[in-house]
Image 1 (cartoon, chains in turn yellow, brown):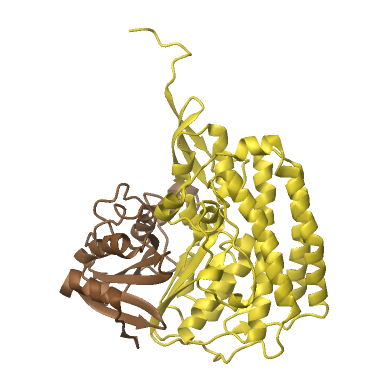
Image 2: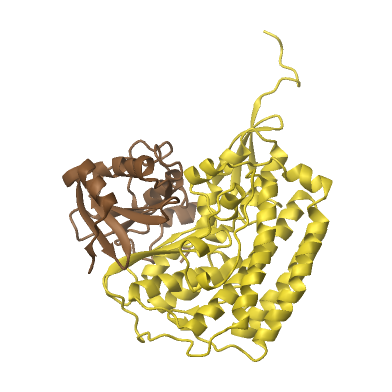
Length: 370
Length: 168
């Protein structure tokens, strides 16, 4: 038998994380490598598990609202919207039109903020240092709107079951419009930095491919599914909060690779601006809270309500036993389910692509672990 | 639950195929669900996937009713892209029962069933990797059971691994 030399390739198991500079929180990926080639990946998660679903069973319906913001803290407004809609469904009520319009505006602003965090950190992972500063600069404007509206920037607790707690502040419309006018040019600026950049293309094109069939098999939704060519967005498929009144397109990709996901998310930001502009122009007058009892006790029953969160389908399955506390709150987290496909996406690729793939899924570990 | 019966061509087909293994077809708040015997669940999911276009398993979860003899509700949520429709499949299982895994039909069931095991202690037969997913593997107890109070923790694990008396 020939003596082993350093040229022989052997399988190597490499631990990536839980503390690792490639961002997106605390998680561990166990990689099986043959040289630079990835043979498989296993995720170890749960480092941020706080038992959010258990907490839900031990709080009243209203008390639980701020907790949901702490799952996907980059898109707290979406989390709150999904939960409020689920409880409203159980109560069989709808928020008044004015509240719905404000909800749409804030949720779309939050989608932009979430995509900006993704774009900045993803580019940083790949080695482009500039975009993160640009992205966070514009995100700051969005967070200022949130701060002016409800006093919080990140975990906003913007909505209440049945509508909104706060009326709009003076100058809200102008500030949002000014943001829209400013922001579209900025998206072009990001494109200028990245889209034609040879390194960017080289690192992203053909990396981490998921076909439409694979996406469906793994339950992968959101921009990943759309980048694979499936024109599916819950805002269009099963509209909520009056999304059917607004005109917007669903951007799709063709190849289902990391580059297409980048293109899809950029276009989604432009479409969000389109929605916000329409909504802000015609915020109806009227009350901001529906008729909701002081103590919420939905009739015995259960409902599943999902929304198109920035990361994919965010669902709440709420079971009521008629008491003031939910009997069960199940959160269907898009990050958790999309992360499962990471093994499929990195298999056969290079170890350097693992960072690109984890970046492209756009996970927030607060939501993965709950 | 004030649900009303659910009847359309889909329920008719399922009725023909599965007969009395499906106990109930209902609609509550405009959402369709069916209740089936545990052994029929995977065949129904497979049938819905292959014959009716329900190709996306949205979620698998459980609800604990400790006072019932069949203590757990297992809930599967399915979606069909072609029909733009959601269906919930529910079944009742007893403590210690090992329902068959859905991983053979939908890959996404892998982590979802692991989470159900982690939180409720329901083991799925035929699952490729039936381990905890969010809590540490050695953790004692399954937190989303109703007899697991919110203040409880695995004292031994916390003391051994975190080096502190209590995490509460």
